[in-house]
Length: 164
Image (cartoon, rainbow, N blue to C red; front, top):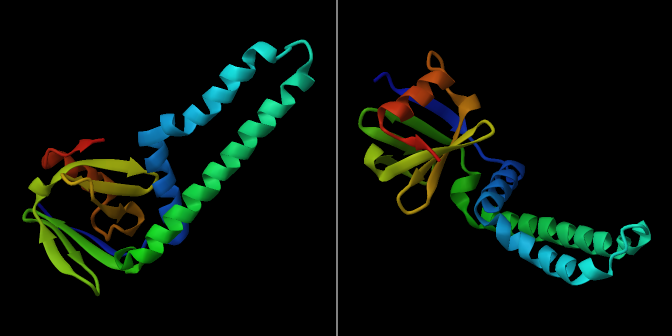
């Protein structure tokens, strides 16, 4: 396999917040839905659908809850981003037969392909997910020529990594 290099991969706070929010909502969407279901269930009998003004308090309550959820998720992800120095480093990834080499100012290591159980795509980002639910964040916009995104996907497929 021709090595595939992704150089100078840097995850901004805004990108991290978006990826984190997508991941949380993908796995735990039902947790955020439960506090909405309870008031709807309680108010359902009292709602007069011929008079839409009776729905307004419930709609306002749901909107307030949605805003609170977004604010809390953003604060938590900002705290996690600032507490993790690796997220703030520019990193170079080299994908080769031996595995994935990770190089930045804090580490230089090679991870065998067997460590990864799959790959998840979120926008232009590919997340190589390991057995312990950690992952490497690969920015497809940083693939160095002559390699392409198709080559990256082919490398994942050759290693038996399935899309999660």
